[in-house]
Image (cartoon, rainbow, N blue to C red; front, side, top):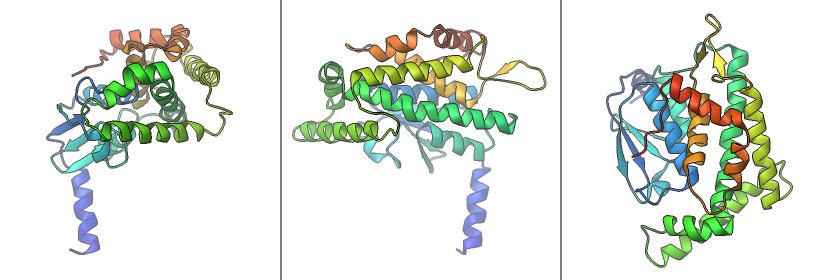
Length: 266
């Protein structure tokens, strides 16, 4: 096959109809807060596009992901997509977009707030799960090793925890990774989101009608906030810090009531 033929075939596949979607996630009982947030956002986005999907579980989903993110989605039994951000890009190539009518400025703002979630808030979710000892010992470790046997049950958590330390420490503006610093960062994220949501509604409105609309950002933020608020952990200062911003709770209730957004859990 020539290079031209290859790209012609690739282009046509992007325009092909989505017939089947398989969502591959962790088995029930082994999900952790970060993956629960990502899964909720993905499910909400698929449902806003009215795309039906089936759910499968695999204990090794983290290790068969193409980019380390999960859940994994398999489209038409051939296209594999991992994580929320890659899903948004894939759906856009297929002609599914909730934000295509936004102005260039609004799209730039959407990307900024999405980066706040996928960068800082996700790092805080990882910190809460892996680096707060009470949460790690009582929740994370049992869940993470629930489908493994020794010696993997000892090795995998060790390497994962070390990976989380490096990721959290790589946040350029964080001076340290103490609980106090993480609480400050959580409050900063909550304040930034609340400032944007200064009045009841979604993040953006239709320029023509001035009515609020659901975009990929709303799905992403709702997915993370809903999972954070619904997850129970022994030590959960992050949840309390986010809950102190009433606008965030109002946002979740608003999109559920007015836009029929629901976190479907399998």
